[in-house]
Length: 516
Image 1 (cartoon, rainbow, N blue to C red):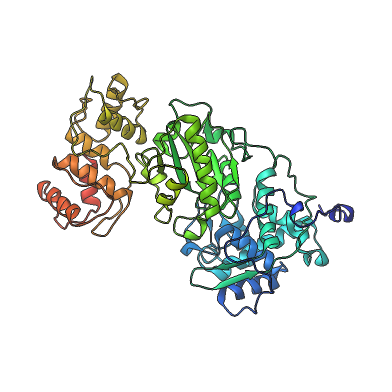
Image 2 (cartoon, helix red, strand yellow):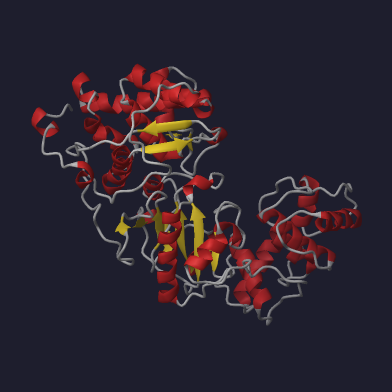
């Protein structure tokens, strides 16, 4: 329904007083001069889309910068299944990709992969929101009148929508100079802003985090976490959102997501929002959910621009707070990345995260992570066994969905039952004892990417551990597929009657995961 003139012109606060979040400094230098004539593809795309749909060019650029840092990620989706510079999404709660296709006539595949089409689609969706709000031509020329349309673009509600729109308008207030992949610069000059917030309920934005005084509180959907914990908190897990700050917080509120984190940190200024109480179990890292606090960091693993000093320092302060509260050792065995959690299939926070710097900031010990799964050899574990290798068995079984109970290092009836269920599923002798074959199948479980010399990451670590169990000789576990790993693969392939090429494809993975 169109808004009344009175509602549209109600008192607008000045500059940053109108924003419900603290001012932030955009990545790059503040832009104080007018943007130069657009001569490069990204600038041309913003100019064309702004003209075609009557959206202020700088507003459009600020939305794109907040969503993606102007990186389309080659058409790959975000965590919320959003695409491109403008994060056109296709999930049960956000159908902006489909809406953009209907409004522009562009096919969804082109909107996903072509940056100019994606920006045009984003402008079309923004204009549609403006039309539904009743903005006339004069109002559309006033960037402040677009605040509720920007909030609606987020497809979030309440505090999450306000956080999203406030971030965009703070970029407009501060100005920005952003360098996109490929080197093109996009500038947005700084300006006074007084956004019209009449259509947006910001109630609760200033709600304080119940566990961390410096943070805000925007709760996740109740079906995306578990009340209470089944284990003592002894770890902090570092994540990267693969999406924007407000978008990720909104994603935790989406019943379809089935994910959440305790805390999320904004890239530009380190603002912290809590979404799950520390006493409760967020769904962020599989088998270690119950024993960890998850901290998400706004950004994408392949773009280092998101990992700002403000983010590092804010996150380090939060981790120091958690370490003190739960007596968590400040070392790389207890402060770990998502990729380092037992059974993980994710790669975040990725190679651009500076672990040494982060550990120095928290006053911890730099070094390599101890994943509690790597041993020089794997001994028989059975009823009555105890110790760290039993803990590893329990972690691996839990990660694969076989309920071994709390990973307490004691091989009791629950662990035996879970082992037998796993063995039956792999057509192994279901004796409930973990010998070389069951160790091999457990350690190799997970995704099966093609690996060869030069590969790296968690899948290589899984390969190296499973080869150690299968061959009975130590294979160094460093996540790097080098000559020694290739030799071990060849030895395994030879001994199992497989094609011998030193590479790991479906046949080799299949043999390992069958416990051969």
